[in-house]
Structures are given as structure tokens and as C-alpha cells.
Image 1 (cartoon, rainbow, N blue to C red):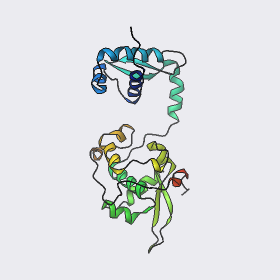
Image 2: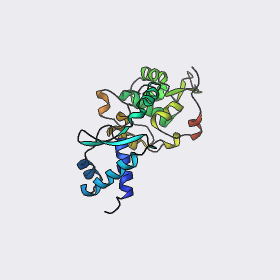
Image 3: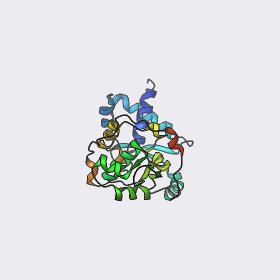
Image 4: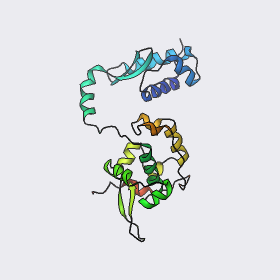
Length: 220
């Protein structure tokens, strides 16, 4: 019997790692454009590779599909670790829109956010401040001296970004949310997460200052 395709084995591992539920072999074959007969030995190879004592996860056949799980002997350690994690982040669509404006236009003031979104963002700004996704960045030197806002290191951590230079384009950001990727990480909740309207006034290609990304948020 020929050896399974190593790239296919790697691809299956990535898909199972990303999936929150068991994945049927038929679905994998359809998604990957591969023959089921080729996937079965690749899946068996992946299961065998994960079976060794040096691996902390295993691939099991559960409820008609394959799923990646932590091994039973490590469950107590995993439970202790999970209890110490931050709770999942839940953002409404207005909060996500406001966060996007700040991320792509920072530093930015509340009046400027209102001009872009068309609604007052005071309540949403307080929510984002409480969740430590944004922080204040001084005051703008204009009439009224409005407060400037920028994103924080927690924002980068929550969205898996190495720095502000890694922000996707606005089009990619909207497509990501429409596809539900933000929702799978607990970033959105509620019926408002079903659609993402375009945000007028935002540049299609952001050009933020990468140096800002390394700074921790300031204390209130």
C-alpha cells in the first residue's frame, strides 16, 4: 500500500483543529476536492501520528465524523488551565463597527466616529474601554479638545494580530464577519451579527503606525 499524501494528512489536521464539531469524511472529500478512498488512509495516518504518548491530542471517530480532542490523561490539567482563561469576548455589531473605525483610523475622536457611523458611539466606547480593546490616547488639538482613542495590546491578542500592520483590508474584514469567522471565536453575539454594512469614510487599505501596536494600554 502506498504511503498517504503528507500534504493531505497535514491539511486534515488543520481542518479538524479548526472545526468545533465532528467532520464527516464525505464532507471533507467534497471540501478538499479529493477522493474518499484517498482521505481514509490519510485520516488513519493522522490518527496514528496522534496516538503516541508524546502527543497531547488525539483524533477520534465521534458521532459519524472525526474530531480532534485532548487525551483523557490530560483532562484535569486542561480544566485547570481553562478556568484561568479570560471569558469569551462578546461584541454586538455596533461595537464591532466602532472598533473597526478606531482600528483603521486611530487615533480617532468620538465626533469623528459619529461622522463615519452616523450614530452616537458614547455607550459603545464605554463598552470597548471596559473590555480593554481600546484606550485613550490624549486629546486632539482642536476646539473642545476631544479625547482620542486607539486600540490596545488586548485588541491584538483577541484578534490574533502580530501588530496593526497585520490588519486586513476593510473588504476582507467585512467578508470575515459575514462568513461568521468572528462569531466562531466568540467575538460577536446576537441577531445583529448577521450582516455587516459598509462603513463609509474608511480607507480601503489601512496604513496604521506599527509602533502603536507594541504599546500596552494606559491605566485609566
